[in-house]
Length: 326
Image (cartoon, rainbow, N blue to C red; front, side, top):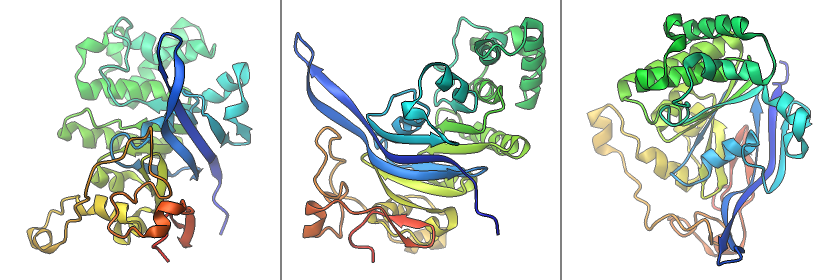
């Protein structure tokens, strides 16, 4: 069996945001948004990235695409380290990496028509004249299930689901290899969410796309993902194949997250045990020593406060950062 092709390697990625105060804007601390995480993305897969609000999921996605320049670490796309690439080389690499944003109301410029929004990538990368771009935009609108005659309309003339389809059309315009989906369905009605997810799956099949799918909704992540990574307070705590993670979660935080997902079977729901975590998520400005999760973990021991757990492969393709997992 052939070895799977690695499209993206994230190595020891760190993203700190400085906190500045006073007249002279002195740096008085840092927000530890992403703190030394490593993982690979296989070509053609969907890697789900889940965790609570503020755990660093969106920051990770933006740091991968160099929307934020990481504090340290490396992001290797194909054989190119994006963290040490600038100018024309980085612009050229960006053709193959795109993003679908969370809020379809905020991510589309209200002063631009659909033709200008979806066609902008072609103009930025000098791919065709205006007439050619207009025809390409019409083809893209058809691809995402919108009427090609809508090219001269403005974003305010569309519903939320239609706007997100426009965002998807813009993301796939240049035939990218990698798309970071930053909670693309969380701002939509439940009835529309399934339509957008089905569209993403269809496009993945037709165009051979690779997704990093950032979300809160664990049941939707289970539906769309090949593998799932769980983040807590800026670090990865578990990474495994979808079915393995959902049937056999090893990290206490993953177990607590999955226990909160409702099961559509009243008999099972009545007898299963909910895991209620005590306390609040610590501040990313001053995270706990050792294991980030120890302040809320029911299994915490002395070693958890003294030593950061290694992110290690416990069973085949199942990675966990926990001292208590053998």
